[in-house]
Length: 149
Image 1 (cartoon, rainbow, N blue to C red):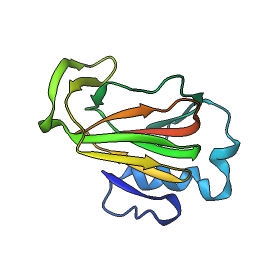
Image 2: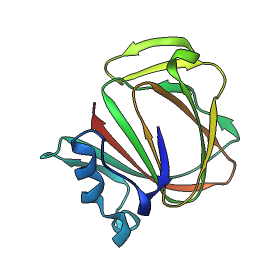
Image 3: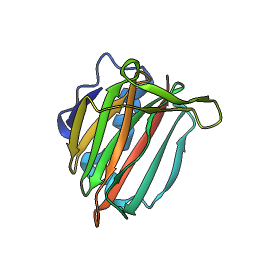
């Protein structure tokens, strides 16, 4: 897992399509802020990204989850969010792998808690389980990039 400011991200030694994905989004020029919520596909590079906006409705945690087929990248466009992360080997499987949703659900305690703010980025590999802490009255605009692993 990597956490950094988007304007300082080092994109060497990452999966081949990831540097292209990050360069193509050019968030430094405000592209992400201007995109409407939707799912976008970049056929040539075989990745998708989702722009979403939402208000957290309660003070709760999502389920622990991990993904096998994709690397997930979260970029906070505006607002703040807390994400908890742990290695999957430290958690107990609640629901076995579902190929349709590409996820495994877990129970367990966090190893790392990260407070994400505007322009922060988190890269989650298949060995990283995560859950999002929903905070009451918090508006989020976020970009989720899914890159084949």
